[in-house]
Image (cartoon, rainbow, N blue to C red; front, side, top):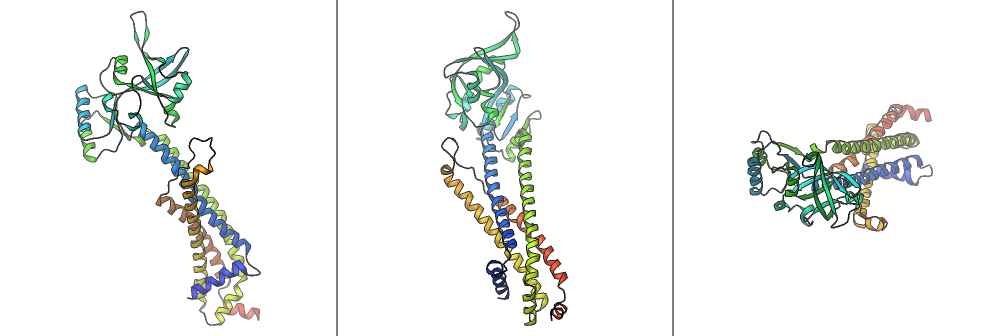
Length: 386
């Protein structure tokens, strides 16, 4: 009950007193904005990162099994095992080529995919009568549907009429748009026999797994000593590192903002405590223990910071929910993707709470300790006033 009365007294003093502390009020509002902004930025940033990762995994798979060092019989055995275990995978023979159409030629990564294993979402609806090309690559080559292109391998040549790079022709049968520049600008897919004919090879280069294999399945893969398995994170280590760096930089910046806000809180509290010093002595004169008064003062600071950060957290979650459900009303019609990608996790909420709260609590404690040090003897202060 005493704590509630103290909190009511302090709150009314801050808000409605004639000498109310505007600096402290502004600092508390800044703490609210820090928690709210950190929640919103993390939600949108994690949504963008998750969208990028999920789009990349949908194309490149969760794991890449390099089978180039396996014999053809071993590759077929491993392929049958994955079919039996119902592991979603794509068997590929991949190589780098030059795709030429008329006077235009661009380097590309071509994937020869097994026609019997096309039940992968990003290829399932595509027309594989010819070549399926990234949208930006097709735009650079200025090719339309049914136009023929040449797939040229500069590293392999035929000497029938001199050293001529080997090539095959294929007609454009479909486009692929993934929102991943490295895919849309440099990659294409054709049926496996087309690339086998180009390279004069029967074996696969790798299997792409579109799910995480179990421990038993991984143990089976490891029975092939020359087989190499790379996760998506290992294949894209530079991207993973940059995304983690982006998160750390964002947290450092918002930590610095909370640091500045907490300095303002410290200044405001020192002025505030000096203003209410006589009131605290009145409580002491009326019989309240001095140590109890100090504990109640710090409890007030603790509750004020806690409630402010919680309110900021709630406001941030509310804004994220609005962006998730009504983002299409905010973004102009010229944007293809008009919804904000939002991803709220428990970890991001805890970070949004503890960074501003702990920083503000630390500086509030410093200001409170300074006040307690300067006013350690109420009796002496009362005598000096009289």
